[in-house]
Length: 286
Image (cartoon, rainbow, N blue to C red; front, top):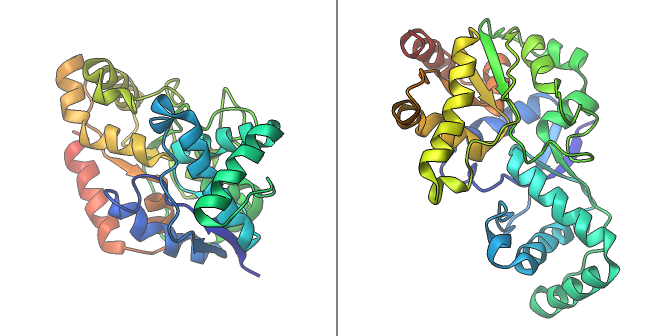
């Protein structure tokens, strides 16, 4: 029986990261995960809205929680930043009845909804490891990903309760999935370090050096590819890697893909893109 989840794409997957939007649904369907889009859900804020107006971000996210609650579903997202941000706001609302009541008053006045606190927020990685299971995941592999691969988590999701049963400080879920999909996991010490989202907008040099630290470590440790479970961080690590290399003086040339791409390619979806990825690894990695 399919597992139903309310789907929140995060800030990037539905706009500038078409590769995530393309790959998440076929990969989830193969695994028996039914993603039900939360039509009209807003951005999670990614911690940016809260810098100006914390209450506004929580209210917007409470609306998303109410939408999922009305469906009777937990929320799943492919973005670690979104998962971490939604979890933080969900926790804040649950732990403060007065705040929840005030936010619910705004929701009722503006959109006719309220939120009781019954939904949950999960990252797709945690659903796969904890609900689908690694043994079952391995049965769907048609194209083993035969590369040395480093996984990147980012800091936003690595907090108690947000990262499932994975270790907060030394996570290994992504490495376990990489191995099941036929790859050779290359663990990074910087795998939970920030790569500058959103400080890239105000402290570009510092953010680029942070990104370079992750990219160069993966390169130096022998990884042929970097896989991110965060769409925001994926964008920085991929789009800005040349600039990060120039600013830091580090070797940052390594293909970067998102977790959903790795899943879809290994399951036999988008074989032409897998062929293109092999070319990228051959060209960029040298």
